[in-house]
Image 1: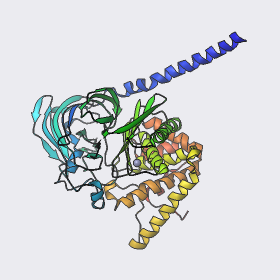
Image 2: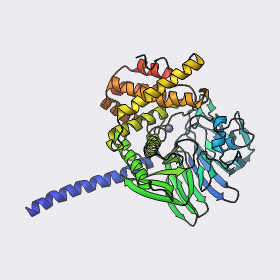
Image 3: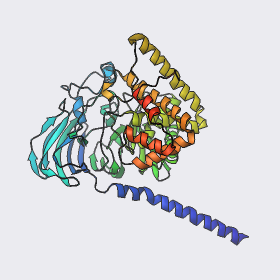
Amino acid sequence: MKNKSLKVFSLIFAVVLSSVFFVGCSIKTELKKVSKNLTNYKIDAVFNSEDMSIDANMTAKVVNKTDVALENLCFNLYGRAFREEASVKPYTSINEGKCFPNGVNYGDLKVLKVSNNGTQKQVTYVGDDSNALQVPLNERLEPGDKTSIEMEFKLTLAESIHRLGYFEGSVNLGNWFPILAMYEKGEFNITPYYSTGDPFYSDIANFDVNFTYPEEYVLASTGNILSNSQGRAVIKSQATRDFAMTLTKCANINSKKVGETTVTYVGYQEDENIDYCLDVAAKAVGYFSKTFGTYPYESLTVVKAPFLHGGMEYPEIVLISDSITDGFDVAKVIVHEIAHQWWYAVVGNNQISEAWLDESLAEYSSILFFEAHSEFDVSYEELVSEAFAGYLLYADIISTVNGKIQTSMLLSVNEYFSEYEYSYMIYVRGVLMFDSLRQVVGANKLKTALKKYYDKYKFKFSTTDSFIASMRKSTGKDIEGFLDGWLSGSTVVGAM
Ligand SMILES: [Zn+2]
């Protein structure tokens, strides 16, 4: 009896151990494979707290992933949107006061030197708002070939609660370095930093970042912090679409492991909800991994920060605004931002021209999360009804005031008349569209279809067309016209 039970126990133990070992290797193995032949950014950056600026040297080993030979490369310089002369501001005039709690002030991103394989080039700003850098190459870069761009740049931060800025004991470093622009249809995508949506679009790449910063801050970042002592951190990330960091004074931190991923919450010292926030984040990583496919990185950090909007997603790190204090509202933002790890960070899309692809999906995914977690005491039906009622009220007010209403989900972020219109079409109408799709195809089939979609497009880009094709194939239903009606705006909500 004893021996037998021991044998069974040993067998179970061996199976569990081997599966743990197998799973334990899977993320690293996959990332190693995916990270081959990607553009690599090596950045040495020093943060100066006297003038809240960063001095940096960057070497980008760029791989031409397009199918044409390139004579130039372009880098988006989002930090330049914060300079005084910028004509396209990264905030609406209504939000200006909120963005700068201590009064309007400015930042900048200046490229001081640039060279290609050691040959110095003139610094040439391009784009409608001088918001990008164009680098002429020494020789044409053929598809699949590599070249090196070396840069020296200085980033000056505004005192602001935007994605990039500092306020009180926090520093937000989102979109802080020159990042290679996407090349499509014969040109680089160098649209300015619009105030609406998340106007960013970049390919997966590898990052090696050495960051020096004042020791009184706690650092959080994309990727794995390989070493970090006396204010010097060595950070590495593989196959991520962007690289963001935050600094927090007087932080209160807690972590827990979900599968192979360490989930960390960085709050403020006085906070009493650290464990609650960490628990929500860990549950979200677990649920989305199970529902859509494994989270492919070893780290995910949720950082409480002064922030203009509710939250913001970057690969492996998300910001949650410190202005959100209600327990369930905090949970909603954490879950939404973490859902973006699946829809934006891993499955990429053009967030400027097709914002619905990541936003609508992230918002609907968070409703699926609450449906599966009864402890939050809110049902799927309640959340969808809330969206429905909100949409009808919005439509009623706008139709009354304007005599008509714009209901397309396919406009570029800058084409929406207001942040309200953007939010109601991309988030609220998006939720109603997915709920309606679920009614057509069934709840389980929809989840399975999203899982297949994730698997097919992970580390790649999706488009509206590829999403529709994927859904049609997975569900076996001809849903093209159905989705087109919702996306183009022709489907009238409330009239069905
Ligand atoms: Zn979002």
